[in-house]
Image (cartoon, rainbow, N blue to C red; front, side, top):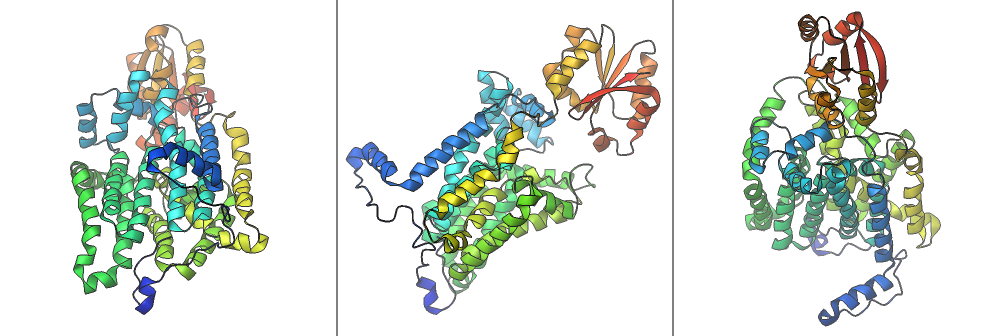
Length: 510
């Protein structure tokens, strides 16, 4: 539980009471004696005598199954194919791409570059996010345990284990799940640092924050909010003795030193990103609604109870640990508010805010005293875990059998069956050739593959190849590069619709 300094009198040094004195699963079970000489035996004994460790191991194994099952089944979609394209570059080339305008940091691409040693299959490309997604489960347990107690930790871990949002992005060859893993470690050491004020914890907070930032630029937002929280909750002490901010300053320095080259690049990229209105993503209040909806499991039926439980968790925490309650409020409200403001100047998509999951689930789990008050039995923890599983079953029932991404694999097979030698394949927009070419070979089919963004581009291609049969491969991304709809209007007049597969549309020259 966070035990931060208070401003008023004797409250500054008081111990925050345990939230669930009667709900401890291990109550009455003697702790095993640990010996440095027989460390493995001590670990085994701990597992045998701790129901929390037993449940956590079970949840981690379940999480492994849910994140690795059918890992390579869905086709690569655009962003995953883009990951492969960057990973194929040299390590220096990846950094130069980021410095040159790629809106993703290089660390994930560097790691994927190493993974290509094992091949370029969908499974290999998604292996690292799936593995780090699994490892995030015990980290979230430790966050909840450090923040409050073991009951909160194990319920939060269960919520993450069965989280549809987390399962989905753990099975995607992008940096979201890896960033969440390292940010969760940063959050863990932040909570620990506020409790103990140990230099080691502050330094590790800074280091893991830097790694999360190297994974994804949007990690900077929650990192800045954690630093703001530390300044707000320790403002009284800092005013009376500025040296009390020494350890926090050390963590900030550690972050800056570890991420300095990227910080310089980020400033330039941010200016470019916000120089004009976004052509994709969500704007306004829809950003907040869609983010809360998706982190709650893509279900309106779950969204409202989850928000109520989170607010209850804040209320229960506020009674005993106001700094901890402020952490929950800051980490949920400020990122959503920042996203609302920024959405008019840069693309905002719920997956960018995946870092909300640990604090959201810890907040929900902190409402456990209400459940315990109703049940009056420590087995209420099992009820909460069972509920976490049950609310995810509608998602799990269809997730592994229904394609979740653009089916470029199936589309490419269909296209190969329709085209002949000398045909023209036009891809709109041109960068959609990345996922298409992962499965389709124009060299094998003897076709000519081109790209187009506008109706003018399409007209020029037709003039260049007036006697060739043309196939037009289109996704709704065309509106991001041609918001006027000029290309779609040209297709409507000059081509016939030939079918679609999971958001990929095919037109054929009239």
